[in-house]
Image 1 (cartoon, helix red, strand yellow):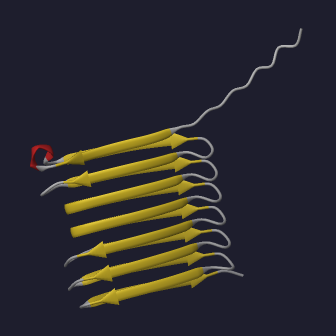
Image 2: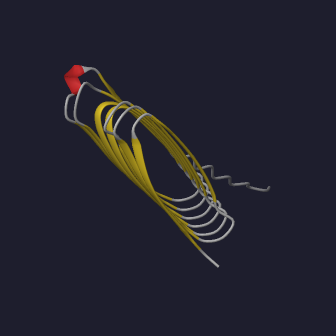
Length: 164
């Protein structure tokens, strides 16, 4: 008689907060492992805050925020991806450390701010800002980097790229 043991671990975090009843939304999430995903949806008239951390390989974060929103994201590892969409007055801070990471950030509205940082090889940042008085600071350190920026409306940007 043979006994076969199989272990399947799938870790997905889905968080959804919407409507005025959830003013002062705060989402804090930390995930450690491989092939994890976090899908966070915050729809509120005001004060949405998200602090998301992922440590490991091939992890994904999807974040949607409306209204007055702030997000802080950290991904440590290789092959990670982050997709962030913010509408209203928003701020995002994103740090990715590792290789083959990607970040797609879209901000719609006025007075938005994005601070995006990547360290490692073959990383990609895509940033779209639509509206007035937006600003961005982008930093990439490594080789084989890609950067695509679209800013429509009054906007300022600072870009730093370094590597061998």
